[in-house]
Length: 353
Image (cartoon, rainbow, N blue to C red):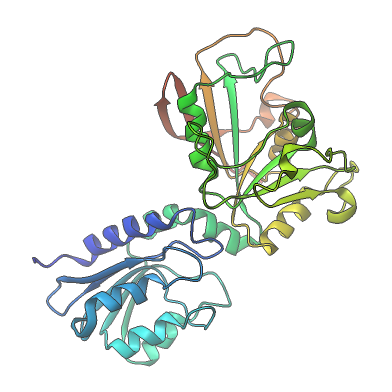
């Protein structure tokens, strides 16, 4: 096998890390490629599920004795503490690697310190190779670790004129089956799905991740969260059907904001405490507006159907914008056709202080 550069190895490690999306939380996505002393790939791995072997351990097992004197290329700083598995920094030292190349330093104070441990053992450590790509691939976990609440994705579906339902309230189905399948795949990548009690009362959604063709549930289900300030969720609501864990978050339990409703920052802090690193905000328009007004949305994913209604509820209500100068600017990052619909992905731009 021909030798590869460290840059090429890191690109491959980032691709490997992505294979764990949806199964590793609350742990991060991590990929590792091991090069021998001649620069040939002798081992590779990724963190596949929480509690399972970490990327470095998988790669070291493949490499065996060929790891000695080689280079470990890792997307995230090797952890330095013992949890459900041992510290990866110690495993790299024991394997006799000579160099460790890292994309992103670990922001988790409990697990960080691997680079210092490796250097103390005489191993050369380089940090920052393809850091932008590695950060983008692990953005939810990194964001939640750095600030203490989950990465929030607001998902909505609407017609071309911005309506989420017809004037009589009917909304099945604004978007195509292809778009709805895409949404269920998105649900499978997050730890929690959040909806307001108004959506539960109006639509009685299940909020599960499933195969729409046969109705089977995905093996891993996100936590269903109903933001219900005064506890109005019916006892027979489908979110209480036992198909997935459900939390009815009331103002009494979470705390109330100035408006008497559930305090959203406190809600997100509690979700982080429960191991939620990425959350999908699905409805309704009033709750979405409150999240946007508070600056709590990190990404917007909109499914826009080539249809016109001309009347009916909109996909978004009051988001704290009263004049054009306060508009919430978005940076488009992707526009993809899904069936007949468009999936638009955008990031809210930070407002000037």
